[in-house]
Length: 234
Image 1 (cartoon, one colour):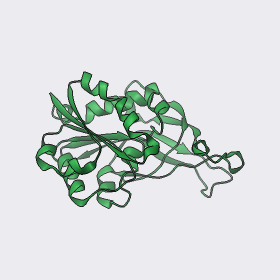
Image 2 (tube, rainbow, N blue to C red):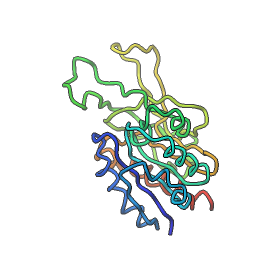
Image 3 (spheres, rainbow, N blue to C red):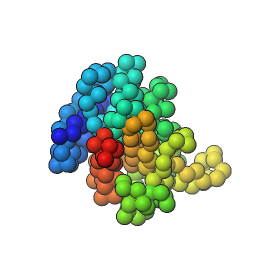
């Protein structure tokens, strides 16, 4: 049986407990012995991490100790899969450049509605946008068979490097109240090979209803299986 760690915490607004609980039965059904951790301290345990096949992280913002991050990076480089969604992976540990390098992309912002339409709650940042499957994504096991889909939720603007394989994108349009002058396309779903390990990042997932979207849930679930050491070794 493969071992999976679910590591959760950080900013409570992303409901890390409830969000990760959605996927525990799926992992169990697919042959994982699932261990839930409410702290990144487990990353510093080299012996335990060496035997871990998959890490599902849901820790928005927060901070990470140097020995914890070193343990995470070493485990992924040695073959442990690493995946997550939204701020739980793409907006974790903002002060850690080594974490940003590991992931290959970082949340920068989520543009909001027209100022006159804002009501001063989180829905001010909910925009209807398209997640567009790339040519690579059409054939990739994580996104094969999926078509472009629309969401009304936070639309992540992501800063990224060229070592990611982009399976889907989202484009931020030009609006009169924004300072940019041409559309900006950000990766919405990507993979990354890091040493012997596989990383999968899915940027949608702000709230439980988004995680329940069939396309979003399919990507996250397939990404868990694809990232796992047991899959990458086959």
